[in-house]
Picture 1 (cartoon, rainbow, N blue to C red):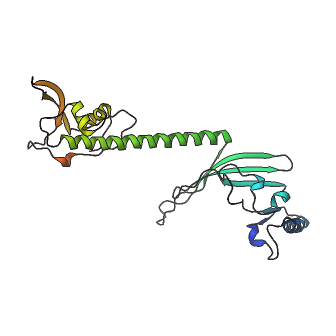
Picture 2 (picture 1 turned 180 degrees about the horizontal axis):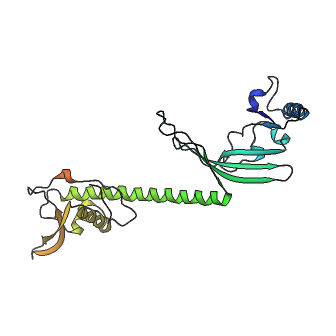
Picture 3 (picture 1 turned 120 degrees about the vertical axis):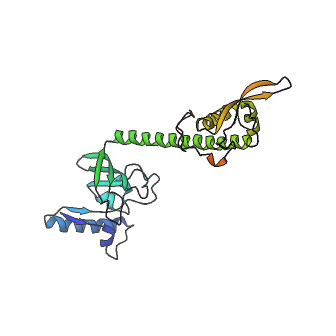
Amino acid sequence: MAIIDPVYLCLPYDINPANLFDIGRMLRNVSDVCRDAGATPILVHHLKKGIANPYVPGQLEDIGWAGFQEFFRQWMLINRREPYEVGSGLHRLWFSTGGSAGHSSLLGLDIFEGIYDPSGASPRVWDVTTLKPHEVNRASEDRREEAKEAKAEFRVRTRLDRNRRKIIDVMVGQPNGHTLSSLADQARMSRQRASEAIESRVEDGQLIACKVVKGKNKRELDGYQLANDDDGEFNPDRLTRIACPSGSNVKKKLAH
């Protein structure tokens, strides 16, 4: 076995890599020399850059330069199936094999090489997991759904956090409290979103339920007011941001 890695560093200076005939003649000479010595030539080459979709399984016609795809009689092609996430140490690849004898195979490879640690506390590894094409597709779909859900959850969390602040802004300076509809109107949000924000503030102890007197007939309506500290004054330092709500239900654990 004779491994030439990489091919482009071994090209003679007078070879035009875009010329099918130049490359064909060179590859024939290399093959003849190796076979005369009883060795199988293995040429390590690269795929073209600028492929329309670089994350689908590589094809023989994706091999760079002229002549190589016409000459190779069996091949192993490796390319990424997803962009590499910097710092993750995880490479998700396609591994495609085939040959003129009629054999072919396609696998997904997940290769984890560990994360570089200058202190050496976390040694590098080489863990390889093989996946069948349908397993790759299922795993990719699962990751897309998880990313979609995480993005939606982040939007909900951000919106609720913003609405919680709006509610407090309205409540400050109003010791007698507000009804739900009054809070929603003054905060300029829907009653549903105002209710979610109020309920969240009640759960973390920043708002309390109370009775609000309205109208000439002094009707008592359900409402909310700011919770006071032990000295009877509202302390804005007690306000906390939401930690991690999940989904549309705001009855969740909050970070204090």
